[in-house]
Image (tube, rainbow, N blue to C red; front, side, top):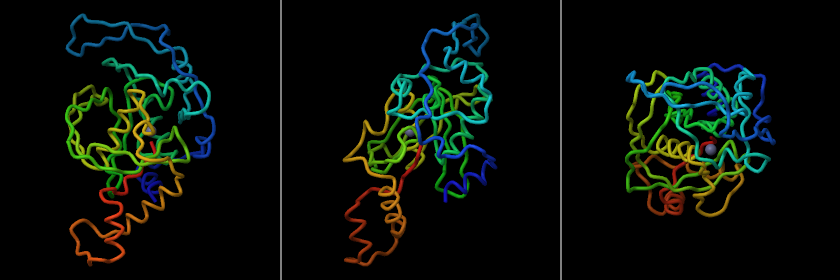
Length: 267
Ligand SMILES: [Zn+2]
């Protein structure tokens, strides 16, 4: 259902199936020893310049020029990039093509978010499909996102990850956050996110710090079929605030699952 919505939204045409992402579609992790020119890092135009370069593995990945990236899958070989703290993006580094490929990759894989390390770039970038639970999802490509505030209130939901295919699990996240990031024009944006969007931001920013949702798991991993079953069960609940007959089956489900809402995403 969500896949169809997203395809409509982005009008993606694909010859690469999601099945290609399930196997060991692995990129060798970038190393920090590439060569390249200096990238200006000060948008104010001063003389501050920092040497920055793509790693050799990153460069070869980018030179392939395909419409998609292959997703780095945990458990296959050479997936250190998933566990490494990604490096900041220099200002003025043109990532237009990267952003387009990441969006296509995310949609084709039926995900709602994908982070730089997941496609083999140890870089603090991510693509998120915000409002994916609504009729108007919107895809954003962000650089150097940072959570600057978060609520004390938490919420439990089910998460999955394109880099850990076939399974999902319950994770506790802050239910509200404030985030800063840079957009593709280099503007610094501050935004707030609630519920599903907040969970998505936290999941993706975790990737940039080498953290996977399984590190925060509450309970055991479960099959995606089980995750979907629980989501369907929750989807059938009446909206918050609606009249619930005490003692009804729905109420008992609500009581059992407490504050878990159907926040499932694969990213
Ligand atoms: Zn993920």
